[in-house]
Length: 265
Image 1 (tube, rainbow, N blue to C red):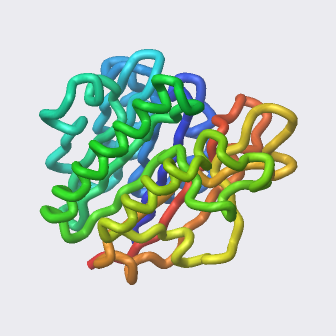
Image 2: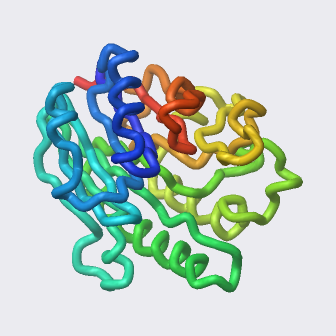
């Protein structure tokens, strides 16, 4: 059994104590921990704290914004950071990192852009970034039979993934053109593990800090664990662990971690 986790920490420095407390609470049962929105450079990442918990980390950080990391108890190899040789304005934001995990599968950790309302440059950037991402994934899937892609995609698939479809219709993360992009990702040959196991269950992964949204469960599902079709039968469970999101002190991230359990030969 291998447990992989995606967790947007919204600043690793601000969330380090909460994160380590959470891992201790779970008896450190997470084998591969994928973090997004680090907001620190590589040299300021808390490697030592993770080493004390038995993790080695590959980090692709960025000051103030963005940044992704993969921390693992299993051997990592073939780390690849960024998209490679593509347009500089896309690759300058550090949002993607991949590794081979124990020579069993390839793992890709993603922090997609949040975007903005139509007409804003951040809206255009998000759509452009996704076009590069989809092109990148085509090559990745051709080269990797066993692939896990997880992270914060900043898009809901459909109205099951929002607490109020009328109030949130055509807002950031629910726009039809955004949802079309996430479906194009899946159409490459990927499976949304949570939806595959629980097709009608409503479960969110993000809640605003405002108005006690997490206590009212007024959230959105924007964090995913996707797998290539060859790994679908390996998935035994997917859970969203609410413990860290419902802590009042230290202040939590606005996301909750999502964890998938896999049995891979």
